[in-house]
Image 1 (tube, helix red, strand yellow):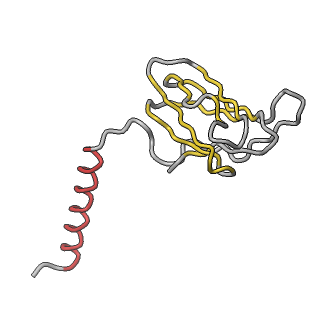
Image 2 (image 1 turned 60 degrees about the horizontal axis):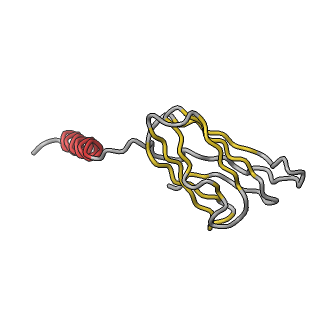
Amino acid sequence: MRPMSTVLSLAVLLVLALFVADGCSKKSTAPQGRVLDSRDIAKADGSGNGGGSYQKTFDATGTFNYHCERHSVMKARVEVIDPGPAASTVNINGATSAGFDPNPVTVGRNGTVTWTNRDAQVHTVTSDL
């Protein structure tokens, strides 16, 4: 009979081997986790200049789905391609399914997307998990 520490060591190695093998079999160019997390973007003040804004530079290609945490109907995505535009802008126009405009927005790898709140309500830009 093997000592318990040897059995545990072999079990840990097996789990790690399965984890690595599973990770290598999936090809995803988009990083995992919360890529977009703007917190609250200030509302527009009615002057026509818009409210607050949020910027994010994307260093990996892929599709990034996001939503507004305050308004569940607001959903959109960023498509990062290579090559692609160096910069893109999204207007936040209201708490509707068309609130993020354009949707989707396309930007190149290492490009920056700027979201500007044009609405009289506070919004967020938050990654779907």
